[in-house]
Length: 355
Ligand SMILES: Nc1nc2c(ncn2[C@@H]2O[C@H](COP(=O)(O)OP(=O)(O)OP(=O)(O)O)[C@@H](O)[C@H]2O)c(=O)[nH]1
Ligand SMILES: [Mg+2]
Image 1: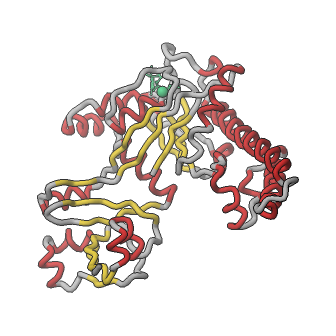
Image 2: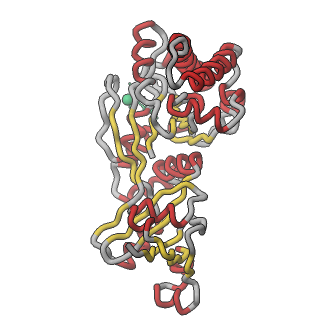
Image 3: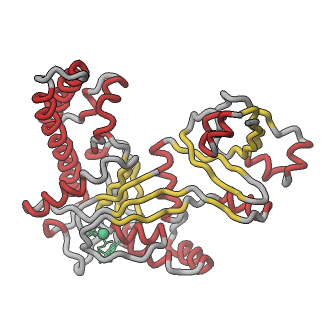
């Protein structure tokens, strides 16, 4: 899974990413996109690791891009933002980082901290970036369909659709609202419209505002919001595990930032994990909810998919309850599932295959 942290300048993107990935803080104001790997915390893997003592444990990961902050206050900033935006069109998920913390030593965007205004401005700019994409595409298609190419019919259909999208954006309607079928969605999928991408919002609040309620519904509807204090999370990430949990308790923080972050991203994209275990490796495999056993097998290796016989499946909770593979088996809780079985979150699977 690839995600991009984006937002207005100085909203705390790099601080958050450093806190949840353990990567050293990059300098504020860097102009290039940097990358960090966020490991997916999973207590089930810890349990399996204790049980099997494997040579290695492999967690799921989210590949996160730390995108330099946008500044739409002048032409230079707008041009820079446009270049950056075009580099993140292929990510699976956007994470909007919005500043809500007050700090006189960090200059506020447009001289005032105002998360709602920032959200509005940010949303509008994403829409404008998509409008630009639509406009460029329309120009290209209009000249292309004059030539008798093999793709003429397709190009005409796309042109019609792009014009519909242009109308929508110009009348301030989300493009999603005018796309009427999966077929239409397929036509434009590869273009990577920003306003069609799943997203979550991180609201970066001041240390004293972790309990403050912010009403963002008017701007982002029911989008997922993660409220955290980046500065605090960064400080916490530098502590050893024991002091960290002590401090978290003192601060009334019940869930770590990385866990909030990963859970929101997974839920937004409909991701779950199945697990594999053994003496060599204990591993979590991220898949879309609804994936069949045979497709899950394909995530591990195409041979396992091709030669699929059965998925020997144990729910993690059963292993935990009965305490060992032997006892799970004795309780009749190991299932032999076929190709079409829909894999569930926390299934421990041993694929039987033959090639
Ligand atoms: N007080 C306070 N300061 C913060 C918080 N989060 C970030 N900062 C400070 O704000 C400044 C900018 O933070 P960064 O994490 O670099 O923000 P950014 O969004 O990556 O900035 P750009 O990449 O330049 O857009 C730094 O000086 C941080 O220490 C916070 O929660 N509280
Ligand atoms: Mg940054």
